Length: 276
Ligand code: GLN
Image (cartoon, rainbow, N blue to C red; front, side, top):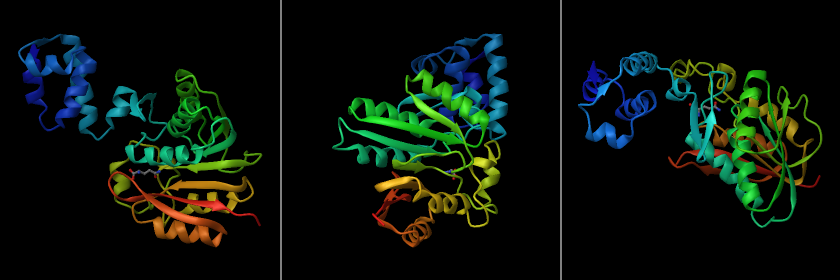
């Protein structure tokens, strides 16, 4: 029999917050119980589960995969190794989408998310649109059928109607949209950072030699799918804002600008399609 306090001490190489979350989930304890009753004994089953989870966490597996879920925009989302773990900085993409909806209550807006993964961005936007009485018609794509399954389950769970399409970027996309968003893979193939992300799908992370392959593909096809005056919003790496701005300007986009995430890093770059 091991106590809560002894288990915490035995795994003190792991982040305290991670240990607390694992304890909450494996032993059904509240934060307060963990803090105030370290002498409480863990049941054998819970201790066994905890040790297995601690081992996975130690090997670098994201907590979200161990628990099978992750919070994004205050929404609990199911995740698996088939999808990128939703990141806090990606909430900026949602904010940019919300600003686009500002002042459009009662209107219908066709929107597209390319490479939806867990569905995080599309689902957050669909929920927010409802609160704002915007009739947002969302299409979301992914090249991974396994990711689409997760996204569709998340969308159902959060009572949102999203038209999911299996598509390699623009391949199966039809029609025109007022708003197109994407958090594409943008990490450079040789980036050492990729090793630390080995548990997540490389497809969702690696963006070629300069990290901009997917971004170039998206920008190249966007004009054909955007309505006049429509907005394209792209998440990118910490040092890619200048390059993405240039690509957008070269493709004829107007009012190109970058937006900083909560860490102060230029993380999303937007451009508007002008009348040709
Ligand atoms: N922000 C992620 C990371 O660097 C990358 C996500 C992506 O490539 N879209 O951990």
